[in-house]
Length: 549
Image (cartoon, rainbow, N blue to C red):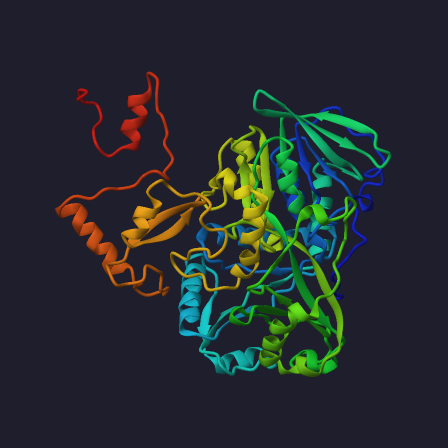
């Protein structure tokens, strides 16, 4: 099977010759902004539910960030809802290959996620448990088995690995093209070369979208709802309406070797099958996949390089930055230790291009808090290919039903406070956020960056009392208190952590004596009106139908 990556000949004119020249309608029920893999997926699923959809794209399909992804797909994730969405994506990509005739290059040689430490192995055991709960084959294997499954990989320094035999990769650009083709077959209209310049918001609800073409000619489209699926440009587009979407771009790197011949995979000397498992060395900050007779190495380094989106050219499309081998050097060294074949290779390609990241490393989905009818599907933290199929379906159902059909709490764009969408906060957090994908995902892990943004009036007194602070919606919140003489800091583990006994002492004090709780950082909701008692009786465990006083 032929394999390609980094396609730039992607356009809606392949299936609709008028996509770049036809007039825009004066009205459409739903306007989707962005024709990357996520926007195409949302449009495809909305059309399947019977909605009228127009996709507006300033350049061409996948031209923002989808085109340069590594194309990795995986079924098992660290949370149940994410696992469901990832599985839905793989299933959809397989169906698209058959239904559209577009070869998305779906291959499933499996994956190996490596553990260098006992803590990482605990994390992988947890991931395996979630996968098996969903019926996904997942097995913890010994280092010797790693060498058998991936002969190019050295098992030195490993304590184990997670093997998932049904993971793999697709061609990201062609997958986006296939989704757009399938969406068009369902009646979705695509218009390329249209830049969104504004929105009409009336009484707190989005009512129209204004675009310009290459000549600067404006056109306004009336609509009922808008979906922002514009990748790293989503935040600035949302700001035009007064809505806050906290995501920020950073440079993301992957490199390709020259043709390695038979060295690429000793078990597949023809180089036609891509049979090497996807390798994730999380503690080495890199992943590796086979690309025909080459290897592709991608990095999620702990010291990410955030970008100011204003530094990107207005016509930035299929764009790249200059190679930065110095920044990549620490990851390269770790990759060469794990894959010794890399020590003597010729590097044929250095891809340095933007991706968008959120403060908590989960993407943003759903209707914005500030503007009704304005929906978001963006900030995928370099995992858009993994989730696009499932996330597009979930958002389409959300719009169709008027409420989410999944447990969307960890993904809902409204989970953030407006303070978490400021440029300074996002720029600082993104330096940590890129590497957070491959950092240890400890229980109760607290971010290091962009701290101290919101403090209560009691903050100093709580600190003097030994508080160990965590972050919640940008607030500094006292999570637990250390006794005198002990430093109030987390010592992370998948076993019982150091705060357990201290928290137990607080519980005993609350039960047996007196405790004061600082609820300053908690949201307050006023429930009023003739139905207030009915609502509160459903929400609260205590009977509230009692006399006042």
